[in-house]
Length: 482
Ligand SMILES: [Zn+2]
Image (tube, rainbow, N blue to C red; front, side, top):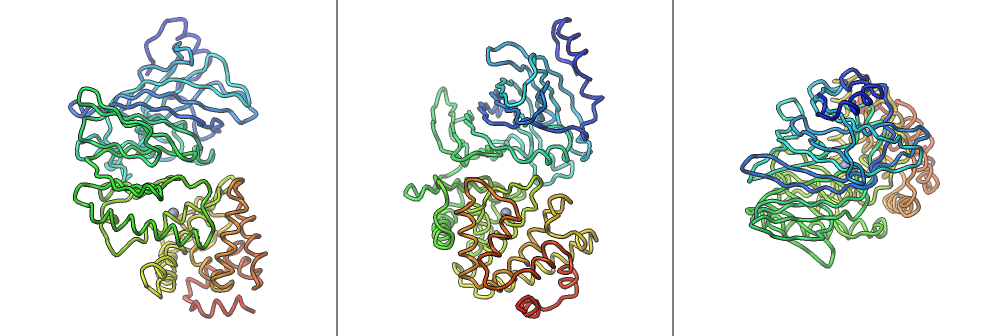
């Protein structure tokens, strides 16, 4: 669909660009990076519509010159204008398309044609005005993306493309370009009585004519912005910069979770040293079935997990991610983020919940899960951990990755293992590191020779056979102690 515009610009677009519908996206490279995002959204509950305006700054770090900015929006959100820094119209096309490698996922693909191409190293800010409806993707097989507009609970987030996201309608191409890392300012206007939650810093709150606007800015470079809206209650620990948004009935649970957060932060700080530039952490309750998620400074936690008083495991897992170092591999395997967080969630259970066998039980549970993964997909058996990123098997870092870390923990001993993980964080927290750098760091700090463990678990697949055959974990430890 073409936006109405003067004949002249219509012709010039036609010469410059192929219509969006006839392009092959899977062969493209997404060069642009989002560096700044300013978003103002008004939610109209009567019309069940959102009205958004954003200023998006993109940077071209590639060697190539870029002629257009590709954007993805939810399929029922329409762009009504795109402008440059001076407010002049930028021509664009938009069309509802399916992802080339995910047919059920329909999006509004928008292409803004830059009047002057963006040279290598340059940045560009554009304004985008959009509006429309939000119904999520749960009917299209993406179960947890139930994002929609409702006074009980409204959700706009990256997963559901509730705001324009730089990308092509190809999972493969977007994944290849890696996560974004940007600063944001977010203003969301809702009727009084509703609360907009976000993991950033609340930098403003103003009321006009029964409408309240919440403004947030990010603490740390972000790769996503989440805007859950509900009649939230808020619980805060200002001394530790901890904040909880909870549904009205869940105040008691929120208090318990706040205590749990403090204890978990203390435990990990003792193990790994202080987290860099820690300015705050927020937990936001969302309804069951919406999928728990973690940003750099917040956790979105589903009500079922939020309400389980005796189960803070998910919290232990997510808080462990605060001590993650950015993975510099082009396609991260997620071993040192997810595998390690899985180990730490069980270790925190042992220490904080008085469950002395949590780690050993966790190992058995995840061995079983890995065996199931291999039954469903034989490729899981044959791909070594170091290739999980390249082979799109990063889910295995949660299972086999944890098994590897458990063996490593047992072989190195708790003190040396935690010291090595902590010194890795402190050494690489500003630069990031590759998985190989991570593994070398641990190896240098281990009294036990790790060559065979790495060979069979990281670079080879003998480990798959050992797990599938159910070799007892104590035998495995003896195997690598020789
Ligand atoms: Zn995780």
